[in-house]
Length: 362
Image (cartoon, rainbow, N blue to C red; front, side):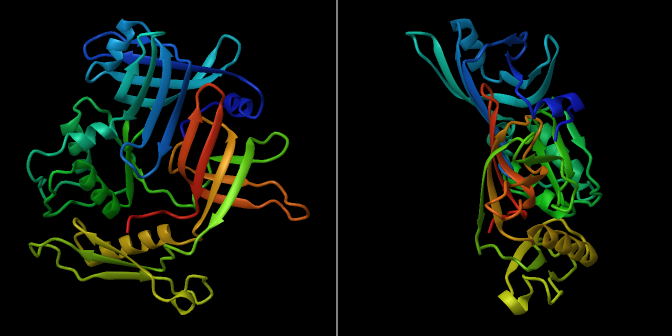
């Protein structure tokens, strides 16, 4: 969660005056503010791009031209007006995906995406093989800066592993995902445009925000859902290098507590398999297997929440949700990851989808 003041946090639980500022900066030009008549920002964790925005505005032809200039950067900040002094949260930094302008009333409708879209379209020109002694986090940094040189890349992770002998095809985003999976990290563009590498979260982490029903709460609606798919209880990590440089055999982490609801005696062996391109030793692979096991365990329960928006929240944040009582049943407390968010910039409403475990492809 982006840091906000105590005053801001308290104000979110009461009616407030909202402020949204949208600025456009064409390459080599000055920033200019553009007023909007409607808009939203959405966050989908684990995707690239992660942050997208839709805006409706009435602009002059010059403003529209600046918006559609290739390479123009759009920033959106949103927050609360405390009576002449505003506290704003950076919610979006990126560029135009598409835009249209009506010649009748000048209304502009546009869709924007963060710089994950830039990474996705600026693929390597040839297969990429970094020096084997480079750290994984430094390779991620190099991949990003090679694509977008002026990006601020910040590493706050604990991963110190080296990349080894590996070759990726032309997909930058796929290479970053591989490096993050092996290193137990997540890497993404934040709301201010910074590219941050951090340790992957766990639902055992301290929650950053509580969404509760009732007086002083921000929850408006909540629905729970539980499915029986992706009930992993075993993680298999295998070497994937084809040149024989990974001299270790596959490592397995599995639920061993017979009282655990996912123990193989209850549901069978349900493996999640990861072919690692960069892990160098068996112990490192086993540690990665247990780290992945921790992330895929838990229930497969999800929540859909409607609430007063907290614009400082981000995908991947761990939150606590406290539901209203149902008849005589007590409130239920959930500790979940945020999977996706959508903010209405004008009304201050927020919808969120959360889950009780990490989701992986496959």
